[in-house]
Length: 444
View 1 (spheres, rainbow, N blue to C red):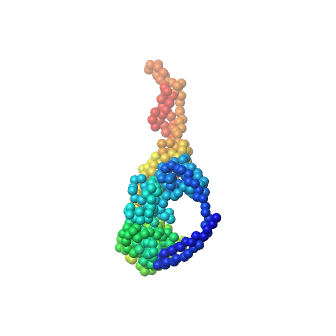
View 2 (view 1 turned 30 degrees about the horizontal axis):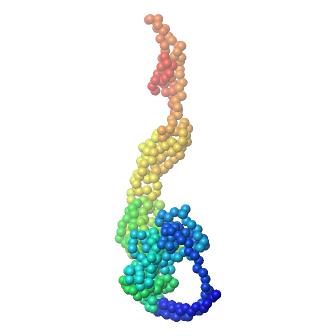
View 3 (view 1 turned 45 degrees about the vertical axis):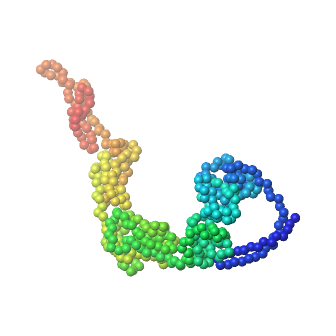
């Protein structure tokens, strides 16, 4: 059986009040029977996949997997339920460690500041659910409130502070949604402290202002520059170094950085130690400025600024390179001390080494300042950080074991000495041999 029921609907919003009468047809329906669940039961709605925790005979939505884990709930204990609509949803919750009671409406929470406010809504203390603190924290504070029968809408900054919206335009300018407005009674409205009113947002134009370096500073290549600026309505910038005269658009541009976020309105630039070597179009001296543009794909040159006056950058003397084996010397292990790359501002050491049993990595100096790495294949193998030397070739003259001469005085026979010829690096050396052991030379 169905019946017609008459409802009167009142809508109040920012100075606009509208009353309508609505006739609705309704049928007499049997409410589903709620099953009995215990506190702490975890229920999954079969139709929505939402997960709820049960307390005091009511269910409370666990709003995310992170909240579930933070509350140390057990995924293995979730029960999937097909008739979860029969279990009432808690609209009053609190945490176990805090007596403050919050009312849930439109997926926002609102603290009821006193027992008087609680009872003014004829609420039931027996229907307050106790939940994990992380569940409570997952709800945002109701952002907008409005006293019943009043056109004024307030933005709620904290549980205790409200700000009146001065006009519908200010409401729109701040991006608020009329659907988020929650109606409250006069007692609750009076429990909030009132902050500054919120007016129409002034129109803000895009702007960039270079703060530093802004003229007169002096820097040395190899050191850092703290670049600072102020910006409005600009999210990212590009930064350039320029040497054009003040007030002109020419000169050379050196890209320092692009696509830089303006959250801090600052950027630290390390001037390369060899800046003037690698960028000969720039000359050392007092002729530099910083230019900052609003970053887009092609740079929005309409929004930009530059240093008010010139600042200076001078080159730093580069340290000299030294090599312990005096350059490229494959048969002597060496250590080099010099700049490892063009960004280096201090010398570092590198040792010659064997890459494998036949390959030597030999370091030497380049341009008096920088390290240069050379790869060389050793003809006689590589070990102990150097190529092996060419081995000796020995030529023996005489036969130390058989050739003997008589001594006319005693009749004894005396072995002759051995003279060895040694061939080494294109030269012949003569040395004394050891006749008794058939080896030599003893020394060259």
